[in-house]
Image (tube, rainbow, N blue to C red):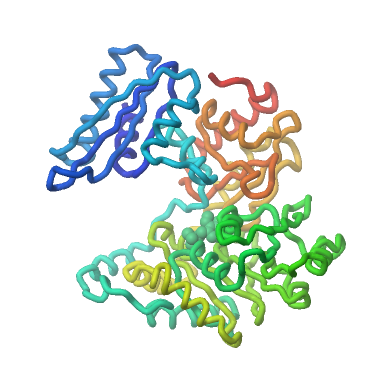
Length: 478
Ligand SMILES: Cc1ncc(COP(=O)(O)O)c(C=O)c1O
């Protein structure tokens, strides 16, 4: 029953359909909330219920869900209507259901959405998928922002580069914490938009770029979407999966690639600063996880006229949905700022003004606030490490910084896409296939998004899944 309340709640909160694991027949319920005029749909939701429990019981659940949406969650919205469709379909991912969903303009083109597709089919799932943290922004900062909403300036456009108070505070932070003294700042709608801004600023269609696996799939897609399709993926050190400078120098891979590639790669997303400078390439450094370092390790930044640094408020301050990040770009490079501004003014104009104020107030809490939140993540990391132990010694990498672990799959089950679906369906835990990050045959597990208790529960399932995989292989789940 609790799960069904959760399902109904998710139906109200999300814009996309939710599906529950099904047997032979699908029940698809679209729920329309009409707008205040009662004419147009305000939003449309889809629920899919699976039988297997008998039709009368299904009818009961169906009634419970509609009741939950109408009264429990949405405070008794009057103008709600619903339509019910039935499907007979042996295959959960079968053509009928897909056609139906696509006819509703639901498209799942990318990895994040594919993972959501899996999640929506199951209500009882633990997500160790997204790069998120479980905490909210600082309470004091949220309270201050609450006071601001009626200020007229909050609803107007702001300066393209960011509100002056925040930019000033960020310049100070960059100088003090990151030792970046020759950098200018542009505030963006998250590090993702920062990355796209930089790609549009530096690259033209047909350019080549270098990334190292495992890479951040959205960065890869930012290149693809902007016509930069010549993406050279460099190896990570097999021992650590780090794009390790020493390893690369021994293997000579980067130097050769940079000198042989035509045209010369414009962007390399790893800290191989000197090699890049010599080759005339830009280096983009993503510092999203600057505060997420464990076991006494420290994060440092580098600066240069060929280096652009990206930062984010999303994880450190639990501000994922507020969308604030920033770019620290070399002040001395002529034309850089003009190009960045051109892109900024054509896409978001400015990052959300209210969010920028929250970022400013959060920054006032100081890095100590963030370090305090991050400190406990080692417990989550260790729980997940233990859960992955059935894979054997040396199979798991990462976790020294950021919020991810990388698990190498056993030889007999290296299809990471299949393993991810199997884990979700059979063991109720969702992870990312390593192939999406350039590491096929691996799983990416995030340990930032769950509280310790939930992480324990997720780890239990993951461990059962890993034992099952190692001992029995990936047996059919239907
Ligand atoms: C490496 C990396 N960079 C950037 C981002 C996106 O950050 P933002 O929310 O600031 O766009 C993520 C999110 O998962 C990430 O893992």
